[in-house]
Image (cartoon, rainbow, N blue to C red; front, side, top):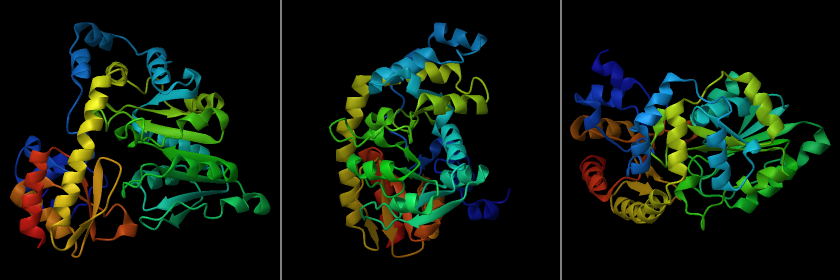
Length: 364
């Protein structure tokens, strides 16, 4: 493929380092990736040790436990919930597919936007009838008509995430309680919630057992830096999960992903290290970006920052890539944002200095 074709291609997800390396003319390992919101502290040492164990590697010769008993119990212990309410999946993306199949049964699905592009993919694949609800950046979440469900006799669902992607806004747990009263099905993607320590978390997991119409999706790939293994899980009523099980292929979670997840959830040292590192690194990047003319960062609670630019972002993205081998996330996959926003993952201070230098040279 010629370079001009590559540079006109718009990745729908961050982390496409193969595409980036082809444009930059380097190896994928040489790309400094700020486009994918993956923990830069890397895979926990405990997970690396497990994956290198001959005993664990020997499991490749056998099919995984189709019930994922040990993994479900590990997740149950972590969240203090019955394992019957847990389903591991091939990343949160697989589980999103089944959640949207459930949503598609309803008369209408509300989708606050801007939103992660995979939500549209999953809703369309299930032939769901959905409407986009504009979510003004920085404003509180509103019911947006859910209270009218009983009067018009429609069955209505809603799909949202917390912390919100791409803004990084953290919604308070109490804001979801009215939604559970008004909607037939509420699906909350908490892919980035792990980046908040327990004292700051606004997870709705503790509401699941009291609300059969609530589904929580979680990812283990971002916080624990395991995107290549594809591992996530859903928390929902056992009856719902049993239905999902009949829809999907057997053994959707491989044995290495299962063992990695069990080890990661038990690694309290890694969790604490990330919670201590992130606020400082995020604040540093935010304050440094504030000093650069023509761009304005937004505060956020996750491991990324959304930044507004006074100029179109694609030229900046291309120059950072071709001249500095730095990949940022343009927001073309969030149509509501247009071409004046980009998203940056939080990385180490040293890596951020390289990014800031490149942006300063090219954004002003």
